[in-house]
Image (cartoon, rainbow, N blue to C red; front, side, top):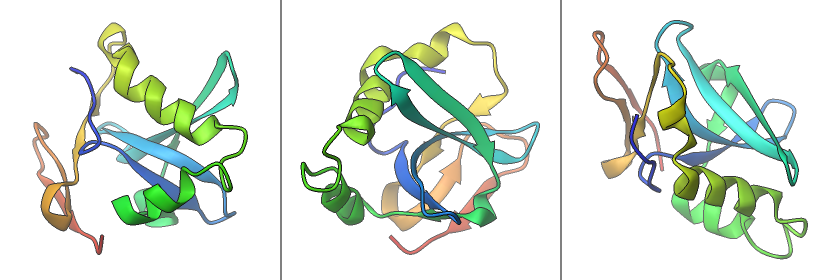
Length: 120
């Protein structure tokens, strides 16, 4: 998997109200892969059912990645790590990138074309 862009990631809110970064789709488990930095050196990555996540728009993302809301910079640092590190190229995973262009969430290169319309 090559590098990620803002078109491939979105902030999500879990049913518990936690914020994470949705960055990939696991075709084996049929789940979205989310992550958040727990500490400066610990990235927590885990699968989540897409139906249990609220996917936030770019506008909502902009409101959340402010000093006021993200004072410890965990969300901004997680996004930066995903966009700059290209860490997924080192893992052999069944993960595919999302494409959020045009208000539709798509996963490309999957045998079954996952295409969920969402309001962004």
